[in-house]
Image 1 (cartoon, rainbow, N blue to C red):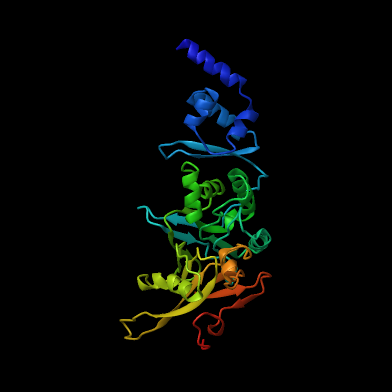
Image 2: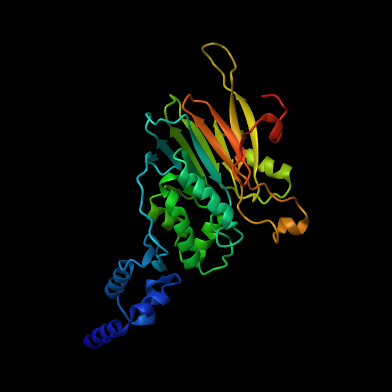
Length: 358
């Protein structure tokens, strides 16, 4: 036993930080590290602590799984974290619900919430378009964002650590303005390949962003108006290719959801939007007032050429940005913009299923 400890100690002393960091540039379990370097758990903790406090690396690790895994990711640069002007309240019983509360005395006429669908970072992502959106959100005080899954590509062009590091660095300037993010199919698949480490969840934990798994988020934003603005965000799994099939898949939640201001669906690498009127019975006045709802298939940032859609001859998807406009008066609208952000309000004459009457 004594000889074994001495051997382990000498092996630990001979181990250079460079060799350790290079090995942990990919996801490794503790068992793999012990076998590779002949060190024990305590020595692993010492090495991890030393290399994540050097200011050059960020440690991502999964501790709530049977297989404990970790990865050291080089830091491109640190952004100064900014305080959020809003607070978040989550369900106490584990349901995917979220309350966002803004101070009522903000001197704004409206808030904007920008919807991101399939970003596909590390793969087909149009990074120039992503940078444009991020710069706009960072620049405008009243503009915020929601990411609805598949932030990473299914197949990464870079090493996993490099892609995670770059995406974290891009998000950092607007981390305080991202209201929530949720896991998509690609993140779930990457986690399964990475011994249980959900890289997007790790980024959100590092940047203090509200993060959800399980495919759904039921959120509400409280600001100025007496009634909250409500959102239902579904990542989805539809592989529909035709416009009508995509719309049918996106409309499915309307069959069981209560009246919700914005129903946001993604995963379809396209974008569509529709204004839906729903009657709400007024039992006191015996009237049938209608209330508008907006269906959004969140736009993808993936490039078109070389995809299955392009090979089959389908039209390129809409990649302009779409955002919810929440007014201090309690009113709410949906706006769409081209890539150069020339915004226009969604009217019935330019939405799917519109009849030209507002």
